Image 1 (cartoon, rainbow, N blue to C red):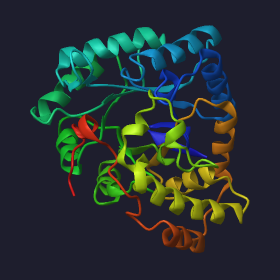
Image 2: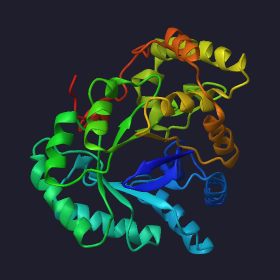
Image 3: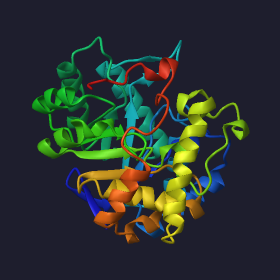
Length: 325
């Protein structure tokens, strides 16, 4: 199964590479390389990363794999615009984005990437000059196309009038569906791919829900309201009912959650994150699941839109995410 990304045919399921940087706990390069090897075997050839993931570590892992294997024909996407020094902030300045991308290319062992995202929009800056700057970066051959992340449909349309926007990256899963109130429609309207990050609800749709009490301090989910206190217990109980639904049909719950994401439209491309080759193999079975109309009705009954308790982000993580509904 294939999906289109900026005119290129890529696997219908991509790979989110944030966990290579230790965001969800420590990992090692050998484990990550094994995951990348499995990805190519499975046809998962669209890899998504960002400068901020492990402060460049995730990009270095991908770069070392490409350097050691000479793997070609991988569609790489990276992002910039979030900075942690001296404190966490956003910059949409062309010079900063260009410097970030140049650093990413060195770490990735690439002369260019196929897709370069603005990771977060600075609300103090109009989007038009930002896109003009990104277009110049693209014209200089550092990327084939540009995308945006966590923005509103209005911002997307304004940006697209300046330069074609190939993709919009938004959190989209069975427990995060606000994009259905305008963003999926806007992407289809302008011909952009909606790249769905965290389509497995940050691990909630695994065979067993993650336990916040067992998460290392470095795991940023520990600060997320949906993984805290009574909200987490409510969410776990709801997802457990979905697991029972999947078990009765012989489906891996993660694969079924991905199949649901794929069913939302031909322009939707989910990028589940994992650093485990075995986990990725289980996820790839999503393309073998065909959800019937009755299946979709039952899933909606079990997990009605808006079922999740708690915000997606807390504190400073909420800044930079454009609201529109």
